[in-house]
Length: 484
Ligand SMILES: Cc1ncc(COP(=O)(O)O)c(C=O)c1O
Image (cartoon, rainbow, N blue to C red; front, side, top):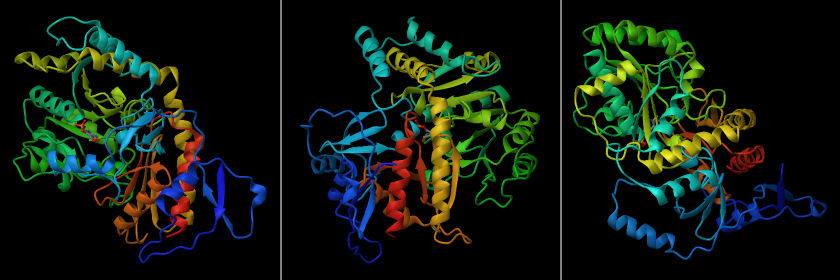
């Protein structure tokens, strides 16, 4: 574990201490370790960022203040940002990001579980650039090998009869399409989704989403939200089949007895990295199929090797869905999504014209194919498993040290840490979450947050994250918490 040593600082502040001036702390965290023989009685450890052999080119663009001003004037007031002093990120390389001053940050959020191979991975960049130089866009009305090659490679990663691919531009669009197909196939409208889920922000997917803070007050028909098999806050703990009974009841009492389908994440991402209770999905899939519905796995966050143990999140539950939706990790940051289903289900879209201008665009699909190749070549699933397991163990030991950590969960490089003011009552520690995140940023670590109450740290870094990065992250979190 690499650390540097600094003189102890006097802490001040009313609610929370100011550790050090932000600039000096982050500078210290990035310096080379000093000679430990100079250690004196009052010295203390400050975590030290692992070395990384890359210096971005100098930044000559507008300042953070100028960008913020323009953003406030010309962009949606609904756009928010993290941190008291929002970061102006201008460069990225693998698991690191750089701000306008050239300061390096460990990226443990991965652009919201999106960057899987690493920022600006050279093989992904080359694939995109080479394809863009030849042909950037043509539409699927003409032939091009890029879309067919990627569809073939993607289908090879899915089990059973899941062999037909539709490309979209986002996760929202993929989920919209999946629900449309389920409704057409089953010949009815009702869909069962989970409370605390997030599936997108268009008409249908907002309906499927199960969190009021993402639902506008507009018509959202035909979705029934089942009890969440939440192992931390749910009334049945980790007993999956008990929660599954609620889906049976919903169908019996809330529908005609038939449903179009069921949509769920294997690990709820936006909802706070909640892994569905074991035994839940297999029981619910049986119930849904008996009611004539299709089972949709939303793999937007948990897909593409992120969970480490499996390539897809649903595989961790021993089920095979009828439709799988994906986005984020599929393109390492390129705007692309996909729906994969069986030939029989795919056939429903031949009843009318289904067309998507950019879906399957050569540039995006060439990039997507490169992503799949990098995941395999660099054994990123294995790395997510090894580093993720190690990181989870270290975070779990922090839980023994700090009462504020109510739960550590997730798998692979999709981990969550829920902060509570009181372990018994599980009162969400919302303000503390923001404070710790902010201080960690000042020390050079970027993490995400989520959960219905905004009190869960989301750790979803690029899958090339190393053991030393995991150590740095935990040491920084430990350091910040120790000052509270
Ligand atoms: C599980 C899940 N499904 C769907 C979406 C929507 O994806 P997009 O933002 O690409 O539309 C998200 C986005 O966070 C997500 O986490």
